[in-house]
Image (cartoon, rainbow, N blue to C red):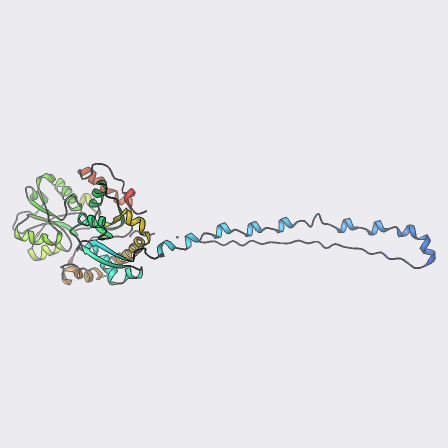
Length: 378
C-alpha cells in the first residue's frame, strides 16, 4: 500500500567579561619641616595617577562579543512546528455525515470492515452506503449531492471529465489480480476460449467502462475486435441469472459473481479479465466532485485514513474478507472463503492511474488526452 514527517531546538550561550578598576592612594606627614620642603616630592601624584593603566576600558568593551543573542535566538529554526503538528490530518471533518455510492462486490470490502470496526467513527464520520450498478451510474448522484463519494471504475470518471463534469479521484482502491474478474459461459455452450466469443452476446455491467476495456484487450489478443461481439448492459448481481436463462452467451463479472457462476451453474471460465497486458491494471477507486473536495478537505482526509485502515485489515488479517463479504453480498460464508480477491490498495499514485486514460485514448473511449494528475486530490 502506498502511504506517507523533526524539530530542532538550538541553545546559545552568552558571556560577559568585566575588568575591575585598580585605584592607588597616597598620604602626608604633619611634621612642619617636611611640610614646606617636601612639597616637590609630594608632587609625585603623576606616578600615583596610574589611572590610564587601570582604566582598561578599551578592553572592557568586549560586550559585543558577549552579546551573542543573535546566535541563541534561533527562533526561525525552532518554528518547524508545521512538520511536527499534523493538524491537517487530525482536524475534524467539515461534514460529519457522509453517504457513499458503491457496488455490492468484493472490491469494496475495506469500506464495510471500516464501518464494522469503527474506523470511520474514530475519525468523526458517520457513514451510510447506497448501491449502484457501476461508477457511471453513481456520477449523477454525485452531481446532485445525493451521495458524497463514489466508488467505481476509472473510465467512467475520465469520460465524465471529458464531458465537462468536474470530478476528482481521491483514493485508489483496486488493481487487477488473477481470476478476480473474468468471462464465463454455460457448460454446454461450446464457449471455452476468447476466440469462441465471436458473434456472441456478452454482458457488461456498464458500457464504456473498465470491463469493456478489458474485454476489448482479450478479444484483440485472440485476433478479434470489439465489433465482433454484441454488448448488453446488465448489473453484476443480475448477470448469473441472465446467463442461466440464455439471455446472454457470456457474462463479464468480478467476485463474488464469478465464483457464484462457477459453483451454481458449473460455468466455464473463458478468460481472465486482468492478465497479460492488463496484469495489475488500475481498476477502480473513489471520486468526488471538485466542489465537495474544495469544501471538505478534512472530511476527505478522514475518509482516506479510515479506508486505509480497513484496507490494511482486508489485506493482512486472515479471514477478515471471508467474514465481511457475506454481510453485504449474496455470497455465503463458505463461498466467501473460495473467492479470488482483487489487489486491494489505498493511497494515490497518479503515474499508475495514467495508464487508464492512455488506454482509453487508444481504444477511442476518449477524444483528447487527459492528465490523471490534473484530476486527482492534491
